[in-house]
Image 1: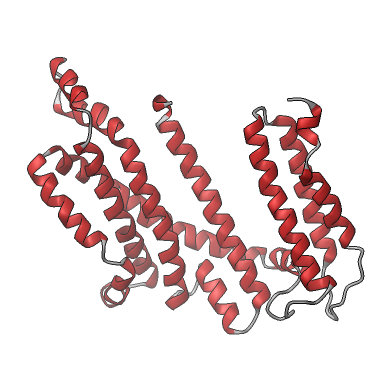
Image 2: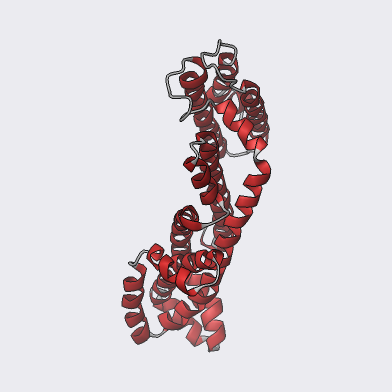
Amino acid sequence: MTLKNRYLKVVHALFIVLILIQFLPDKLPAYTYASYLIWFAIGTEAVTLIASSLIKKKEGLDLFADIVTFIYGLLIAWTLATAKFNVLKPSLFPPPGRIFWQMIADYDKILINIKSSVGIILQGYILALIIAVPLGLFLGWSARLGSAATYVSKFFGAIPPIVYIPYGIALLPTFRSVSVFVIFLATFWPVFAGTMSGVMNVDKKTIDSAKVLNVNKATMMFSIILPASLQQIFIGCNQGLTVSFVLLTSAEMIGAQSGLGYYIKNYSDFGDYTRTIVGLIVVGIVIIAISFIFNSIQKYLLRWKQ
């Protein structure tokens, strides 16, 4: 790519606009913490320039630049509507500089709550994968059992896992164990159904070729059937991961004493919408980060299909 394609982009013009509007007079009586927004913009622009130098493919660079462009545009509109023109109610929509200041002030609380939420997700999600994938392989390999299990998974998969929370609270000792149980259910049925679907739809020619080579059952199952079913398995895994985040946040807002959902609910009850917005942003960042890691693992394991 030429220097023009790398560095002459709208995103850099928006960065300059974002910085310049910080020097307009504020119409809010409260302190807007504009310096925190300026430092965030400078850091983001530095990362953008580094990415412009390192990313080799034009499509990848354009995608990255478009994302940062959206962020700059949102911050410009947000700043103008709050700190500069006071169009939005300050108690509900604080200026972005105050949000960044609050993030730094509460970083220790945020990290503790991230650790709690991610820990619950990982426990329930991994436990569901360990059980659902082998069980789906075994039942999907049997045409008779697989057909019956498909209808069973559709029935239980249609029941929202959140309805099990009252039973979990009555049967399990802690709210954390209840949350792990709900995440397990939210993940198990989509992964189980996806695994069975993948096994039952493996190309018959692939299976016949393996039988000609006289491979044993373990090799057939884990070296041939499992790789051929991975695409369908990952569809179920993606669905389970998405639902898990929604359920966990909802559960934490009901009765937890930690976690990102608790952080949002706790401060919204006190009318602290600065911290409420901080919690919403952090939830989005965590979900994007985990989804990125998951998609990277998926691309690596399915690299042979490229």
